[in-house]
Image (cartoon, rainbow, N blue to C red; front, side):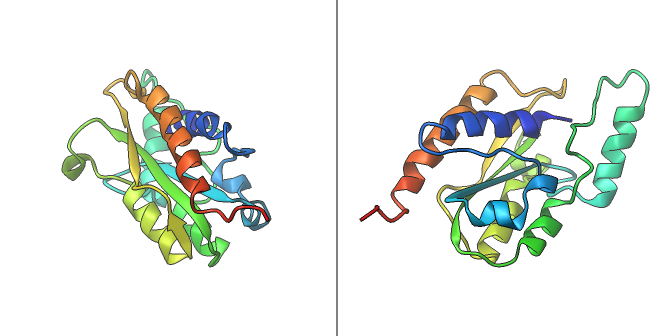
Length: 170
C-alpha cells in the first residue's frame, strides 16, 4: 500500500551521502542496472508472515478495492515478485541489504519479509552488510512515527558500513 516505497525512498535519501542512488521498483530493476551497483538494497512488504506471493498480492488488491477501505495499491505493486526477481537476476557477487515493512508487533506474530530476502540475496552471491531490518506500520496502515527518519538513518549506516567492504581506489 505504499509503505515499502516510502521506506525505500528514505533509505535512498540516507545513502545519498555516500552513493549515487537509483531507486526503482522491482519491475524496473534490470540485471544491467543491478550489475553496476556497489550496494543492492532490496525490500518488500510482509504478507502473511513472509514474502508477498501471487495470492497475498491478490488479497491486498481486493482489500484496497473495497469501498471505504482507505487503502491504495502502490504504483509498482503489480510487478514481479521479489523471489522471482532474484531468481531471474542470477548469481552475482556484491554487497546487499534487506528490509521489510510489517505490522507493529512481535515478529513471531507478524512475520518478516526481510529475512527471506536476505537469505535469497546470500544464495545469489551477495554479501550482507547489515542484519535484515523491519520498518513498522501501524493499524491505520501508515508508517509509525519516527520510522521514516529511522529508515534514513539506516540508509546512512548502510552507506558507511558498505564503504569498509569496497576496495579503495589505487
